[in-house]
Image (cartoon, rainbow, N blue to C red; front, side, top):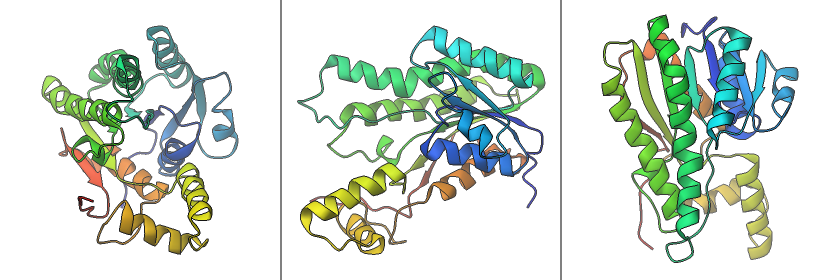
Length: 263
């Protein structure tokens, strides 16, 4: 299937590592001109060096100046941005009575305002181009939160809400806005954390056994496993493509059919 991504210019925030890096490489493999992003000078350069990703930019998305710097660098490098992937975001595991006001503000700064700034900076040139894609990376916790990260899930809920309102605001422009919400993803960090837990609690040490315990205790779903980064990247590529032109204002879960349970 030709996704129609050849020569489209895509900026993927927070793509110096993790799922964002895999998304950037996935888009590049489909023929897109991809701009990777990191927070420090040259922090995303290795993505360019090790893949078909063409450009790397840097800047702190938690500030107005940093977002402006990223947008300016991206436009200077590629001339335009057709696809904005607001992948950057971070979680803090603080429960209701551990998280203070500053913790809540921090989660909104990192997960909502970083994306809102990039949208404001890059949407006008998308309108001038006659269309584009804005994709937010969320979490199933935006609609199915647990008790461990209330500030994070509230922020991601706001991010999904933005997609709906912005899709209406951009009616008739050819720009679609969607949220992709994964459940657990097998990132190196997630795998390392669960392997450490396995050692501590005396579980079997092979990944298949560990994954079965994750599914049974944390993430029950009919597929019986957690997502790979490549599966999330594949969905992003499709939603970014010409094939998904009629998908707009949606919060699309990629969670294996996760079933919430009460312990």
